Image 1 (cartoon, rainbow, N blue to C red):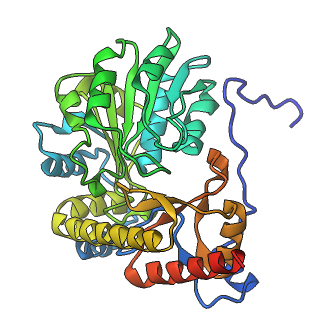
Image 2 (image 1 turned 135 degrees about the horizontal axis):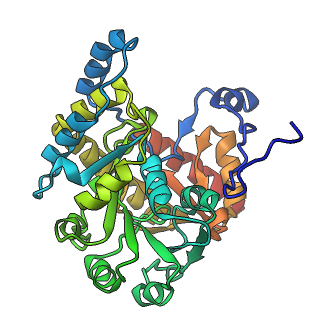
Length: 372
């Protein structure tokens, strides 16, 4: 083992297995139940047609899936329309892997990737850093989280290969409007690919949200990332896809391993695409819950940023680490934002009314105790 040589060009993240399980947390604090409000999951679950499709394919799992994902790509195109073809689509095992495929396709050691914090930095770094590429942070405007197009363009040099945009942005829940994306796309040099991470796009009702697919139709250097984890309720299935002009999409798809999609994921994705009524129902419910939680924050005089996704960033006068612990002791798992240099902010994933009401009750109780 002493003579084993690791690849010096790869800088892997060290895996962590020390996080307590839900069962351990439940025992630790003698909780009746756990409220998972930290991962932006869909509390309503997948379409019943997805469950039927999984059950139907399960007995055939001793056989390999089809080598090609063409049926899934056709189903995705049927939903997206916009003059797209299956050649514009490449799939991955989650939106995270789609990002990883893009990074592997375009990044080498010493290349630079521009992103704008606070954003989904942890995930982006995990696909950038192991390749030896460098993150260049052009922070959003503090407080408003406005995207600074001129600053991003000013950070581009000959080493820049990717610009990663999260829209709606995670963890802020804010939208980068179409005029800013237009200004960016029109000025980005030819050697740079814009990566538009739009996994929460289904929840957006802001008319200023850009139609990013138009840039694909125009042949621009852009790759859009979508996921089945959020509105489709398939986070546990790990299924996502990218949209780009065929030249880019086919090149990235060349990074796939053989039989890259499992049979369950293929069946689930196709069935999900065929039940848009369920997706619209999920979006309607969670948009309503977003409005209700915002009303409660207004009542409690809690600052928040109006959401365009299925989560809300909010701020209290208690340090997020302390509030996170107090909520945990009551069975509520939320995401504190100290890691994003917002020490008093937390992000809550929206759930059904019963869960949201329980959270508001717990939050009101904790903040009331801290003020006395």
